[in-house]
Image: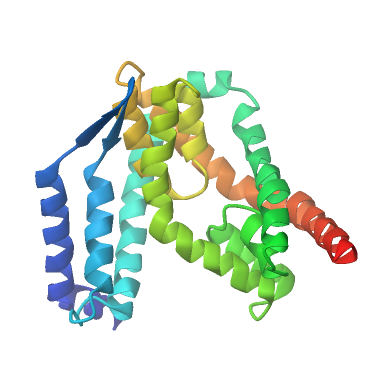
Length: 262
């Protein structure tokens, strides 16, 4: 029944096709700022165009039901994407092995998010929902973890779902701009930035990786793809254990300390 709805909603598919064609016609936009260049890619425009169509009230055929259909189609597309990335990564397996434990240790960045963002959220008046928001990047594995630990009716779950939805909408835009900018500024090497965009979200990783390749045309694209895709897989699994044994328990300690001070 749901499969029939996916293919029968032809207006929605025409809108998506139109947004993609328009984005491709615009092409890449390079914005020189000082000694660096920020490159905006068609993937970014297409997301913005669809978001605008979704928010326009007179348009009734792109709403919540179509968002559900789009999510199902995205899952199918990501399956093909991950297969392609897996094949590409195989040719650069030696470079990945040479990176050693860095691919795993980079996930310690989740602790930094908790130590910085969580206290700020508490100071702004948020409560237990802030723990769900800041314990990790809040993708599917972390949503499942928080649901299992605190329940689907908990404040923590509301927090992680808020960040999940926000990340779905704005995360890809962020990834397509910020990591490539850091590469252009010389703050991170292309390899390090490729590892960073593999944060557990295939769509965010794809957007960030495309921007990094554009910002660093001298870097080997196969190596960058290998670092990003393998880092993405590691992040998806490691973030669950990081949350279970480190960030959530540490967050509980920080929350108690702030409640005593308050």
